[in-house]
Image (cartoon, rainbow, N blue to C red; front, side, top):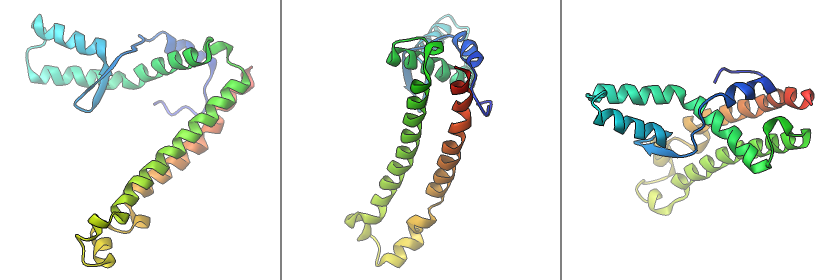
Length: 173
């Protein structure tokens, strides 16, 4: 979130100081730790939260901490998956993680493209238009799709940022 160009091991120490939440709940599209939801319920019961405005303020506070919660949980998962503390990760492990992140990043874009293509390939969708020109006038062409264009740009920028982000971790070993 702070737009760092690289990661350092000191970053992990700071993240590990944060509270680790392992259970999450989707609350109307906002994912928050289950413990925070339980805290909200308790605060409503003890009347320290009395209004909808206060409920929304609580959700806003959770949202502000979301990236920190995710970072803490991510380290926990990586340590669990690799059966060692993050400080003990080898260059090979960091390269493996970087490759996986790159793969997932590109798969997300490919999935969005495939999903959007269904709008153009589905014969039932197509029969609602008189011809392809009319369909493109309503939907725009897949090439001109603003959402996909933005996603492609952000995916490319994300992928480009991975190398320097991981470089310092690998060099510090």
